[in-house]
Amino acid sequence: MLSAKQSQTVFSAEGLRFAIVAGRYNQRYADEMVTRANRALRTAGAKQKDVTVIRVPGAFEVPVVVSRLAAGGNYDAIIALGVIIRGETAHADLIGRAVTEALTQIALRDNVPVIHEVLLLENEQQAHVRCLQPKHNRGTEAALTAIEMAHLMRTL
Image (cartoon, rainbow, N blue to C red; front, top):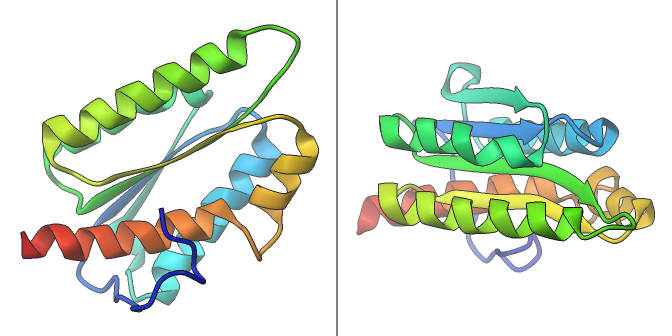
């Protein structure tokens, strides 16, 4: 995924439809990513009616909702957001791997860009940097990538 700094072209979101599917677990971080993604889409010209936000309990629940939305064919891109913070067991790794594999399969199956920002992080400090700070906010980066991919897919 391109960061805001790496992107050479600024694309308009006008006339495009987006879905944001985000886990509520680690809510402080997930909420800010949703806010930033939504703001970036709106700043780029997306209208409120063209951005659907759906919240699910946690990261593991994100793919099933993304799958339903992708199969419906109503969105130019879908943004998957969530925050998994490693603990003392392998559970976080298992969830992260399952989510990544599922989102990849959905994008390939339905030919819809699925922007994967369900983050697997070591600690809350990493979450703070990637979710709460504007410089590296993954919600903003996901939205910019979604806009660019939506345009790219329309040219293919």
